[in-house]
Image 1 (cartoon, rainbow, N blue to C red):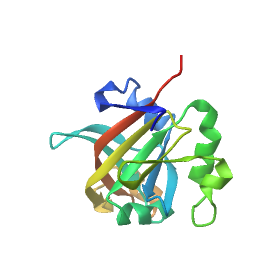
Image 2 (image 1 turned 120 degrees about the horizontal axis):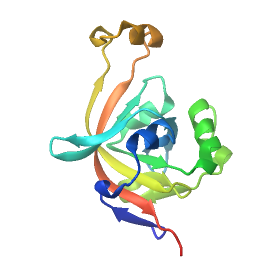
Image 3 (image 1 turned 90 degrees about the vertical axis):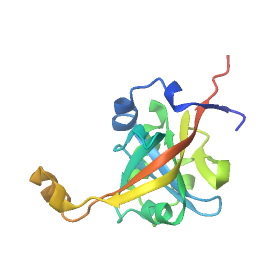
Length: 171
């Protein structure tokens, strides 16, 4: 981790709405031997049960879902604008059919407890799952949401933030 420094979550200076909603992120789960990553623009950060947490949403139909189910932890990797094509590719191609790492040129970075981030990212957040639940269509107050997803509902994962890795800038 020579190029990254560990910072506390409150030291992240960016607007989280921009960070997730506009810049997007790669959700990565698995281990050194076998992992997958997917692009996401839904999620959040906050406090729950006296812990700093990240919340992600993943459909069971996504290949990464299997890795999230099998492993206790996941990472969120954030990139600069020049990597937007990588994020587009990882969001529109399944790891079932494509080797996303090879096809995008991403460089896996193995961090604590076998977690995977990417050297090209400028911020990696590692999380330990502490809760999950499935969205229930009967609880949608706006019924248009239910109609839009046609029974392909997300699983919510809440992860306790373990570490935030910020890329060091060489002066």
